[in-house]
Length: 150
Image (cartoon, rainbow, N blue to C red; front, side):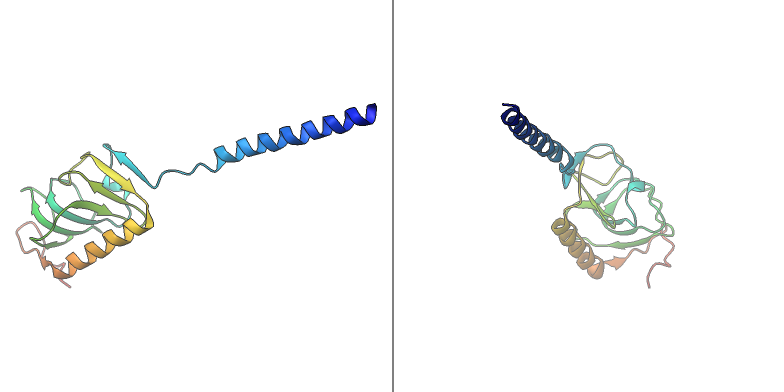
């Protein structure tokens, strides 16, 4: 009888451990979503920002930013930043090295937006930015330093 009880106990123990490991793995394997909404963000979160703006609000930009803009608020400090103008721009987003922030309205601090790290979406946004950059004209205006036309 002791052998039968031992075998039954062993089987129950193995099944219990298997279930515990399965439940534990489900929790560990939960990955962050590729896309999430936000209403609090900072341009500082984005490495090497490339900005495409149909409408740009007053926002302090890092010196390494590249911007293609249709319209922007007076008072924008664009000195020392690579900026081009393109009247055909539709949409507002900020691309980084590993993520993008797609905004629901003008590019301004804490505008409602969606973060994404989805590879296919980043590739499409990069293509759109690069095509727009090529077609855009350097912004010649009192606010820019005119040194960004390479």
